[in-house]
Image 1 (tube, helix red, strand yellow):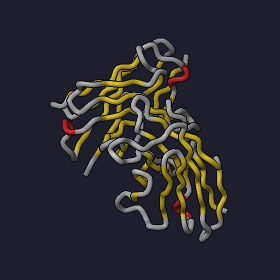
Image 2: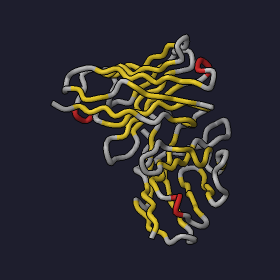
Image 3: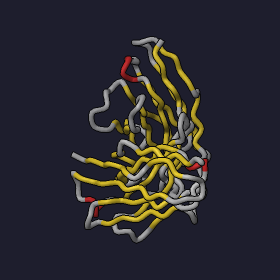
Image 4: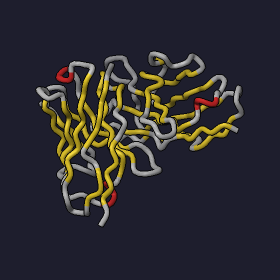
Length: 113
Length: 117
């Protein structure tokens, strides 16, 4: 199974300040079709997970442009340029290059200072 | 508008069975693969199972293989998860989610399953 390792596991950020979350996979997520099957989700309190970023760096429809994703191979990063109060929740990276199983990172809890 | 609504959860004793349903609307259900993902209370996300759009292929997490069965009825736009021989560690919120070329794009609101005597 591909292991997804996120750091840090928690973040406390002042509104307006940037935040960054790292996700490392135990195997390359680059497929022979040229796509990299790495996704970022946000689970807000009491809600289902929602897709933020797909294939490393593509923002899903309606996701604010303060969210950005980068990386390649086995190392990936989610950045929030200016954190807002509505960004609180748990962020997960996920891989689907290998199925089964799809695997998630442990999650990174973001709180506002 | 895509809508996924889980039902069938509740409290069940260890060793017993339960069947979850996921009613889909707002899209052509028979065109999409579907997943079950679960989340134990206060913990992270764990993928459970996937079924191809036509039911031709099914895959499971090792933790549920041989105990859980994913199925679908495309005529009823409904996804199922039959859970047998339930254990305390199966206690979780169970989500159904629509596959879209590798990403889980739309999720249901989740259904709590509690395995306890």
